[in-house]
Image (cartoon, rainbow, N blue to C red; front, side):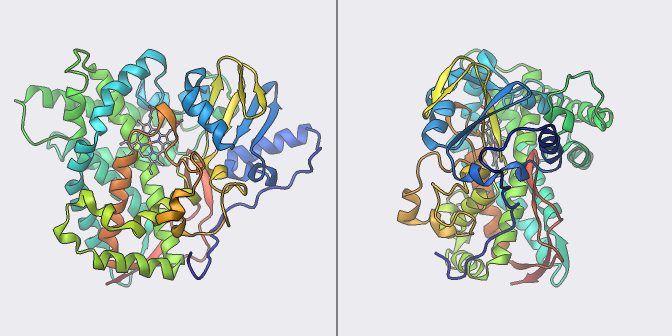
Length: 461
Ligand code: HEM
């Protein structure tokens, strides 16, 4: 346990009297909060009780944070639960039928074809690329000794550079600058779920920002399509096992290769699911370290002692247990995917609650990871929870930043490897101090983002 406890910023849970009756004002307030920051919707009782049910405009909901019940609906009885309409509404225009929103046989076939893409060997193969990008960007920040850098932006750039390097290995046929500019713009205008989507309004209702977003999406897809055609036209190269070539080979051995549309859908899916999530987690991690001098110096000392120059970067996490624990603790406190849901197809029983068909099951890693029945001092930053024996005591499914069951994040080991490498490369060169006039508040806009650009003053080591 750290000697000085630090409680990082989070909205205070609301107090609602146990027998409060639903009112029209209450519903309006609910929608206003959901549109502003869904993390503010949670009440004190949500962090104390395991399963709660409610009904909003006729739709039944169950908020589930009992690890055993989570296991049932995400793992052992996952077939009974399908994705919600909201997930499709948010992602379909961007990723078509990519894995993140595929269902039924299409999901099974795609997941089977993509699983080998993220196998141990391929993920390890990306480590040197990750290290090169991280070292270059850490050097660039170290060179800005004494300057203040918006860390949130720096991490978005870094995570995008890592991902595009791994997706296309710097293929000359890609105009990387235009690609990044487009993605950046898209993040800016489409990063916030539209309030109408939150209210499950019909597709034909106009949504602000949609027009420009759709134009950018069309251009991004054109760029990836052009790259795919250029790759097909070239003789096969050796040594370019980037995601594009891995996807071109996916499923081929079983005689069910992915179609060109499926390849493009899934490349864009990796960007949509893997860029912001990783960038936000890194930003929060940098922030948490800057507020905890003790953890910061332990992490730095661990990197200094590890003699990483002689170690394969794919193995750095083994040499850096505390750095890895800091990242895990950061994902406990600020899980990038803070809420996800499923619809019950047939009746079921979760814990001691009967679930009717059509009920929406919502589970929130934000709540689960701060639940008073599951964690000691849940609101306090303490990476030692993830060290040694303490880590073994964490109840199964009380911690799931990457989800659980058959739809668990396919990029989990890729992003853990990336985040350890990035943090190590930065700790080897630079120290950073949060100099913002206000502390960043977590706001959920698809991912959990900081409310500020998290300004940090750089000091070269
Ligand atoms: C810190 C980084 C990340 C976090 C916190 C994260 C979190 C998650 C979570 C919670 C899910 C499951 C959602 C559900 O069950 O409804 C998920 C699914 C997914 N993630 Fe990640 N993710 C991260 C990085 C990545 C990366 C780097 C990639 C790809 C390169 C990726 C690709 C995907 C895909 C394709 C799915 C859908 C899997 C399926 O439905 O079969 N993620 N992620």
